[in-house]
Length: 428
Image 1 (tube, rainbow, N blue to C red):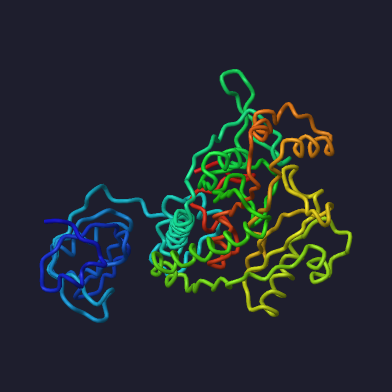
Image 2: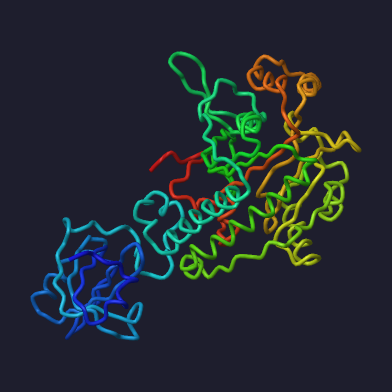
């Protein structure tokens, strides 16, 4: 008999079926016992009246894996409107050791460190797995949106020979006796691949050895990167980003509707044109000093409230960041060279995306490195490509975990990460 999932039970009313999953909960009453079985799709209620079967159920521990063969009977009060009667129950493994928290409760009450220490079981809770389903749907939407616009998915090295890109701290390692580093981003490679395919994207891990221990930072996270050629300026990149976000949220609503319902989340609309303010104006709106070189988290929150109040938007572009705070490959604003053709996208008052137009002329790279007092040598393999003809181009990178955390209202990005890696955590 072929196994079916809990969500398929209503289509089999009156039939004998086989399900399998984990013992989610047992309710042992005087005349009847209820066995709740959890599978990847949801819950199934098994009604036990036979004394021998009841005795076997009483021996089961929560999270033990079992198989149940039973008859499907309609019951509006049961999960999905059906329940299973006259069952035979067979363990598919030894009795499980129960986790240090109750997975059957509506909310997972264990502290976040306890959840992370026992991630293999904590992730089974519907609220934790729902966030991961939303994450998967968001990635599918990212790919679909860019595939529809003739982007090509690429895969770039995660071990590199230079530690210089973007100035962030890096993880060093030994590569057959030579120094090497975990890649901080695919930035250089995705730019080079614009010279091959014109439009490219990548979904992959990036590594930042920055000593942050905050609710918004991870040492390893998933980056959704895109780069496109033949742009007029950063506005073209912002248009593609807007459409990509709309596609991601539409796919989440379509593919992860059950997960959204579990968390009580409704995806926000993406405006046809996301409001944008220049960095100088953003400082004034946020009440920051006019000479502030960057936006602090408090400034971002103030801007998020302003965008919601003034434009009814959960999203806000901030453009024209000072060149001094942008990587050397960022294209300056021709009208205001001290400002960049770069942007951040804030989502609900937090920076979600960084992007912009890049330099594309070899001589401009030499000049940009000279201004910063950096030698060309460590960048030679990257910069040399611009001698061979590169179009005006730009791109962006979305932090997946931060996107999902903001979408579902998680207080800590680790709540939506299966196995987070940060300043203090290297296991499980």
